[in-house]
Image (cartoon, rainbow, N blue to C red):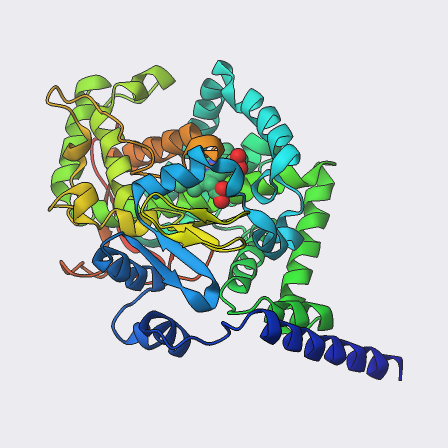
Amino acid sequence: MELQASLFFLILIFLLYLLFSLLIKPKLWCNCEICSAYLTLSWSKQFKNLCDWYTHLLKNSPSKTIHIHVLRNTITANPENIEYMLKTKFHNFPKGKPFSIILGDFLGRGIFNVDGDSWKFQKNMASMELGKTSICCYVFDIINCEIKTRLVPLLSKQDQVLDLQDVFKRFSFDVICWFSFGIDPSCLELSLPMSKLAMAFDLASKLSAERAMNVSPLVWKIKRALNLGSEKELKRAIERINLLAKEVISQRHIIISFLLAGRDTVASGLTSLFWLLSKHSNVVSAIKQEADRIIGENKELTSFDQMKELNYLQATVYESMRLYLPIQFDSKFCQNDDVLPDGSILKKGTRVTYHPYAMGRIEEIWGEDCLEFKPERWLKHDGIFFPQNPFKYPIFQAGFRVCLGKEMALLEMKMVTLSLIRRFQIELLTPPSPDQHPRFLPGLTATFSDGLPVLVRNIQPQP
Ligand code: HEM
């Protein structure tokens, strides 16, 4: 009886909310070409991924900005707009409530999910820790140890087929857990089942991201209120994470943000990088030649300082993420009416998304060869790496809220790449065709829907 009454009450709230939404938001449906394609999913007949369709639209837009009215979403690939949002008018483009509500159950009030004073406080604390010089050597040692004692022995077991995406996820989870709270979840021990924490984590981030795909937040909010379907699953996964995290820490939220930030992103970056390398043996040879020159033939990497001299390797990692980046787009909410530098008018409450995945494929930004994988574009004539304007390449975001783990992520990606390509020959199980392009799962970070199955062979002699 009590259950029936509460169900009736919830349905009543739902109907009232629906009526309210219809009255104040007349844009539940829009007949413009883009909105119709979004709502009917007709874009999926021509494009493998939503990000590819957005790229197509952004490329063809003269201002490099488009509007999805039914989502109240303005999407831009225009570097001037991005500088405006992330730096010039930073205060008018917070992450905003809709985003923090979507991720609130999972991340709580962690750094990823807050604005204002709470963000400033956590950022200062985290920057103090991550900014210490000693931290680089500490990180170098953790990564080096995980590579030598787990990653290399795992791949050395004769010729074998492995899902590299899964291996990289386990690897980066071990590293970030070790770094963040000094525990070793041993995810890379393939004989052990994936840790309960890692599995609950996967599920919670997938389900949280799926919330954002609904045209109206009402859908998931009702499911959450009634504890149904995916929302019930999400609740359980979060309970599991909290329980496991509480075992090791008392202040859980900033740590959970760090796990999310540092695990899936690095694994995603490495997966795409190895996918690209398998199609570009010239780049693999150039990385090896540079390593032989700087580190010495058949010699091991010994210090953090050696990494700084590997310009071609750095260029390769940057170039890989120009095309296949871990966080394909990122959104803010416009706090007060505003106008972007390209003239786009924004009403208060509009979601504004910048789209670095599309940017990497736009000729006006990267030149006619933008679709080619060419690390050389990051090198000066003397072979020294030079960075680009961060608003043209906002892979780690840019401006005031730039990623705090950028250096750690780059170090991890470079060390893994170097160690693996000098020791192993890694081939895709299905030989790549030139126009082959991955399909991604919907989620907060880019994940190949079929993993990255590869055949691994030892190369002799080993460094
Ligand atoms: C290739 C790997 C990585 C990429 C592409 C990346 C990218 C990003 C991006 C785009 C953001 C902005 C997100 C937003 O505001 O919505 C961000 C923020 C952040 N990242 Fe990373 N990240 C990576 C690795 C890491 C690692 C390894 C750590 C931790 C050690 C980390 C820690 C953070 C933190 C704490 C923030 C929040 C900064 C703030 O809000 O002020 N990231 N990252």
